[in-house]
Length: 210
Image (cartoon, rainbow, N blue to C red; front, side, top):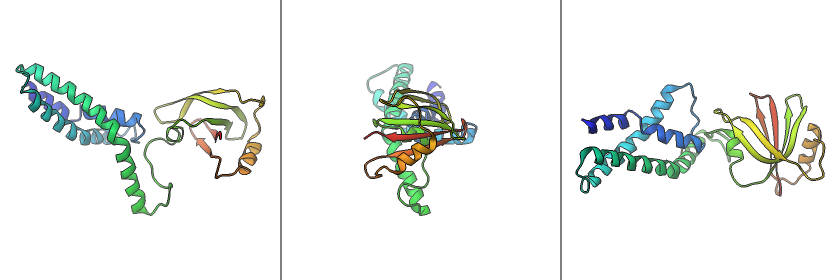
């Protein structure tokens, strides 16, 4: 009876939600929080693999554990760990493969086209050092400095940010001056990005320090 209950829990997506949470933290999914059908469907797909792992763990552990409830609990814990590690390992490359095939089929060249996850977290993912200049949509200066830490809301938008002072810069340059400065840089040696956050009505200009 317990086996059937646990199996049903895994099959209907109980374990799949763990995969969903991990994949979401990795930025490899972009599901609408209000679209419950998408969330459940995504979880069910992962649950197929989780259920297979659970059954395999039961078969292996049954050779060493005689107690039924203990064997089921142990199998469940092992499945949780494997599901977590499996998602960490295969979700990013699987995401890249799927969207590569999407864009290839649609004829999108290079790095343009569809991508999953949120734009800003993907942009800032890595160990690169950024200078950031923030303006409102009317180009009013908000803040600038060397990016220290940034937090995101559930929609992947920046909702908190800390910056460090830039040496020899005490006042934030106006928007046009920053754009003119970037236009004069060599694109082969310097990377810069403009990110528009429509929820906060702000423009983030990121400049990767050489």
